[in-house]
Image (cartoon, rainbow, N blue to C red; front, side, top):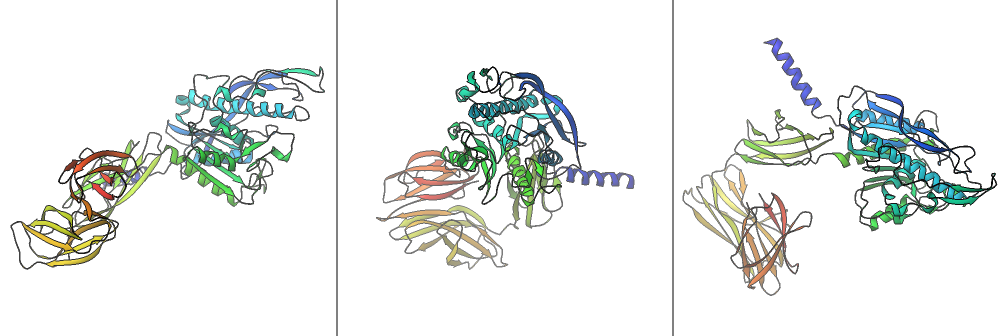
Length: 589
């Protein structure tokens, strides 16, 4: 028996731990494994002193790929990192790029740090050369995205979860990869340009650089699924539109002297054309209604405020206190883009509880029922051993092993010696509200406490009815609430046993308006059929909205009409009339 028990205990422990690995947000791998010098494309590089745009040589574009050491998954999210350097200097081996790649790989991502084409002649024709340098960088960043998508199977990645993160010039690449995507947005200076300078033969023609996507794997999209922009800028905020809704995380210091937080010339050198920094990008995103974004703006901080100078650690060993903040914030932001959305509901019958998964995007489930028992079924049923309060949790993962979790309180009460036979009704009548409810099989029932609320959540007792004897047959009870205030009034009945146990009726609501008119509906909560009572009006146009404010149903109702909402999903809704005077909560169970 011992030989069997020990493996079973180990398997259970292993399953419990592995099932709740929080990949992508926590460091779960001990190290990363690097594949160096991976060619992801070829491109024409500027040669010589960079002043002659037609003087190029074709060279390889190189990246280093980092993977979690020992990882067995073959469907992972990817982050491509692009270094700083003003399109003049720098390489994929910058301290911060290597640290980012290693840190995110140990969280479960596949990461890469890329080289991109450099070279900018700024003594003459500075606007043209700087525009073309940034455009070449954009092309190379998009080539890296296409490379991963084209080789998704061999690299073990999800082609729909490819992100770009960039610092400074690398952030220019990331930003324009999502906001400069239409051919009409291509800068004129990236096309064929005639110009002159002091380099023999003095008159030159800069060749057309082509479109945003050039080179290999052109059947794939070069637009990433989201970006991280660290102290970056765009050439024009008008590139941003509501249609370009890729998620974006931006970090920037307000006193950045290299890439302006607002607008101005890079490096503070007026020879360069103005660019528009993170603050103005954020303002434009707000104006077009973008919501999938996060900012980390620090007042008084300069360029690369996490402790680097052109990608090199200033202290020689690592980042400052802001490094950890950016790592945490950016990893959490990206996780939100690809995680499933955990949710569930449950129904009780004595000690037995049926759990129903409402998660979107999950492929595996791990339930903890709060009493030491677990399940890996999607919709499990569980029988508790005793009545009480339990904290049930659901942990889910999707096809890239991204995760989410949710907890809910499960309250199990012993069945009370009473049956609610007719839902509570509330009817306004000439300054007072008439309440009526029916019960049967009353045993050990001490009293009914009438409770009133103005918001449907916080109830206070306004009266009670004592019970004098046990009764088996159905009996009606009445209570009158005098001087009912204007507005929405919610009512419920609390039934109390002699031993202190209690239960609640459904909630009834009545809306009292000027002119002695009112509207009420019941039962609430409802399984889908609700009845309306109108006082002082022949009919009402009723609108029903979900929690997101989406109009779900419009109906003209008269006194006594019933409305069938049985096709509605379980949850909370709001019942309103056409002119907005009524706004009552409704629960569909």
